[in-house]
Length: 241
Image (cartoon, rainbow, N blue to C red; front, side, top):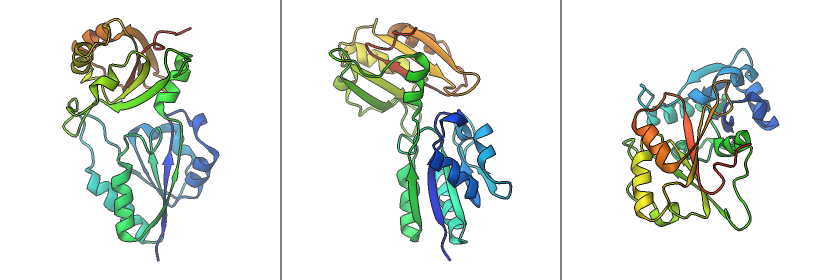
């Protein structure tokens, strides 16, 4: 008997941003394997008898290994269970989705992927800004600020990231942002390029900080909070109401 896995995108943390399909899968799941940022009131949609398993990863904290998480998915589904793998933001953005899919495919277990609201979109909405604008912000690019070692990746497209006419969203980049800015400025991006630090988007502790890339890099060089955050920079980042 083989079960089924639903990869459910939980959005940035506000339960009101869940899709109807996401709620339906939570309500019928036998087991829910959830990320840290997908916990709290979102889990209230799961029915009382479901197994609730925390498998989230947070920088600087003890976290389950990825192969362990993938093994749990296979083990639960192999019993015939309906499993929800609850991921923060959208499943397909920097969420190790492919590794978990590979494990299910190897075990012959069926799955579906339910999209959701990325924290990038939620941050822009909270700040009251669009991500694009005719003439001055025709392109949006998402990039990770950390490789497997937690440091700035060395193989990024620096010319693209230094494009002054693009809106860039940096995920998992608070610690590496000073190093990123040094490279961006060396590639011609003006130090006074607007930047927005969005922390705990969709949660009661949400914080939006207006700055420039140079000033924000200096602030983060002096220390970062433990709040999850992402950084937007480009021509729109300071257009806050």
